[in-house]
Image 1 (cartoon, rainbow, N blue to C red):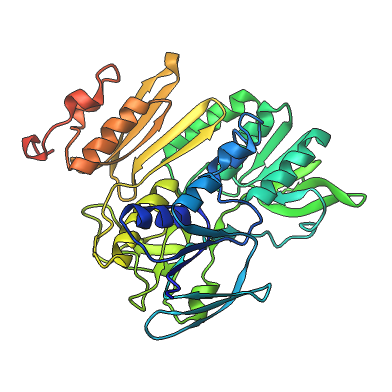
Image 2: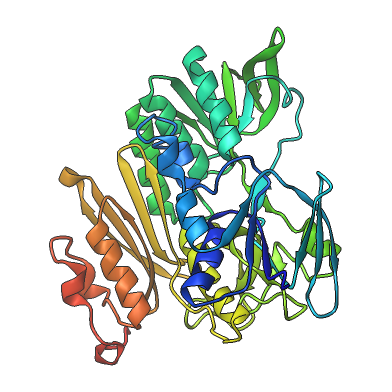
Length: 422
């Protein structure tokens, strides 16, 4: 009997790979293995709707058990793989911590990433939490009713989303960020400034350019956060969100090339030419059309997990398809819905489209005459127009986009119609 495909990691990418394969007619056994004692679930809502009690546990689940049964996908929970014996042809055996062995003809790694840990005095105190998976979210939600003062360390998406949720739940929230602006890795300066102004106005105390010296104890639990300037911010709970580290240990143990993730090609194939790696753990060639040759990226987004899993499924079926597309992201932060299309890296000018009365704010990024990205706050029409234009290779002329009352869709044009800027 065939051992089929073993997918290590029942994440968004792992689920997308399994379901894509069945949709393509893959008829070999598929085992979807996760190290948590939960059915495969969606993570983005953990810091927002689920934490606030707006959706139920069941709403987080990707699929019903009936679906897995009907599509003959074996979902294995609570098994952590600690060693892999792999043969030259790509088959092998994965050994779990429990002593169970999982044979495979082909291997897929969807092992994701783990939170970057603080190395400070007091980080092991009760009440210092991270938010990455369901167990983290369950602990956070259980502690919230008994706390008032919360310090969030980290001004990235997770930190801001959780801070906005906790503030909405009536907690006093201080957000501490080491950089001079919020979400500096993902958005431009104008978007950072808008987010800062909005969240401060809503009542969240945001401290930028701030180092954390230590976590202060109050008896046997957390009591505050001491900043580099000596100020101690009171805290009944500290939530840390300072980035993630891709899980590459298993890949390295079977001699796959790794560099800020498992290195894969445009078809999600790892360096052995057989194993696939998808999602947050994968370092892939930049899929944006026109990206510099040799440029590589590692995305942490639902869209990337799904799209990369599709090309990985084709590769497993013996059909080489290249992942080439426009990345997009979103972040719900209280009253703000931020949507990002494209990558703004390398832009040389920006254009702001603003409608203050309706809370709409978009920043368009250009490289020369070419639009390359947009940050859109509460402006889904701008987001969809830019995303569509980027995907079709169309242009949104800088001069024509300046009037915020004019829909971007109406000024989208073929690149050949552009008049080069002086």
